[in-house]
Length: 220
Image (cartoon, rainbow, N blue to C red):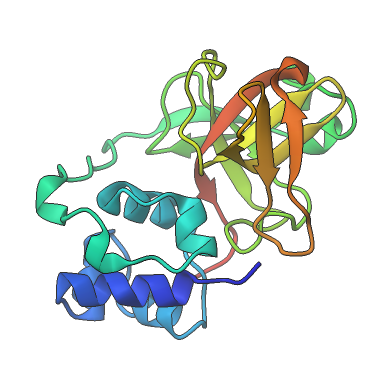
């Protein structure tokens, strides 16, 4: 799976006709961050990918895995500004998701809470999960913390191309969900090219959580 993040960000910078630092400020990034992304010295966090996705109406899957045509993307003047994060932080529980591996359910009992986090972009009832494995690199790595939101109506509507926690009868996956030609099937994809995409019947899915942000130990 070829990584197109650097090329796509470069195209969007050119589209805006801004300096790299000025473009970065649109997404609350530190000075030099965009240059490091374009030069391949660092990778954007999932929060940054989500903001770029929202501004240009481009899925995260496209940003990471496909060469976009910036000339055909939606004009930013037609898109409302991204809402800033709330100034106050909500405290949410951090669960040890390793306890969920192979069980087919998220262990959300108090005994599996390993910390409580203050997260400025979280809502009430959001939770945080530790990420295990490298299937979603470069968007996230093992050891990162995913802030997730329950999607009780996932069977009726999902924003395809985003990252979700998918709970099946036997496993808990962190994957990109893509639309399938078959109505009752989802395609699950990894960012890491060492992992193949696969299909899953909706009837085997118990719950879906949307990854709304990543808290990373890495610095960019």
